[in-house]
Amino acid sequence: MTKGKRTPREPSVLCRRRHHDCCTPNYIPILPRHGVYLFCVAGDGRRFARLFRQTWQKLPLSARRRLLKHWREARRLRYGDAPLTAPWPSIELLAYKSDFSRGNSPDAVAQYSHRLCGFYFLAGTMDALPEDAVEAVIAHELAHAVLCIEDVYHHLDPANVDYDSMGFSCSEYEADEMAGDWGFDVEGRDLAIKELEDAGARQEVICDQ
Image (cartoon, rainbow, N blue to C red; front, top):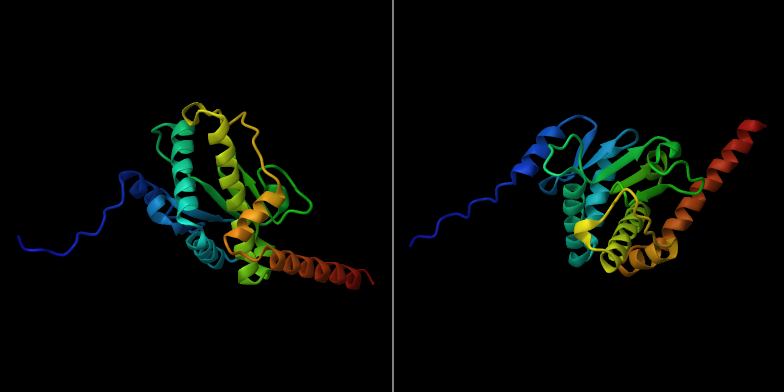
């Protein structure tokens, strides 16, 4: 039997539908084969999507598989076979902290919502931070997701999870510890964010004089 060229893997019907539904200027592909897109409201979406993709590739394979499996199951439990009207999970680059799903968090530059499988990032800060610091921010939020998934699967039957009433969470320390174990510089991230905050405070003083 003659060996022919390997046929490229065709995306699933769901992935093709996702790609079709997400072909708008505000949606930027991150992992299009898996239906993962960035919804960019503000900021440099192309840069952020690239850094999210780079961060994803640095995660252990086990963590990536766990996240993808959870996103598929959570989507199916929430929406069944209904056509997607927006990407799942929700990854958003936003202009204001008040747009975060859980409301304005004064000290937060990003936020994760396990109930919504949502990741929310403050565009101005993400644009201003160096790339390694942005990756550490993204890794921290992905670590929150992995830790929440572990909590759910250790305590509940995943086929009967009520994502609207579920209240599992993990500490910032745990998320930082996991991101650090993955190789991301969480201390450098904190220093970079503090420098931005200090520069902003100095600018406010100058403007008030």
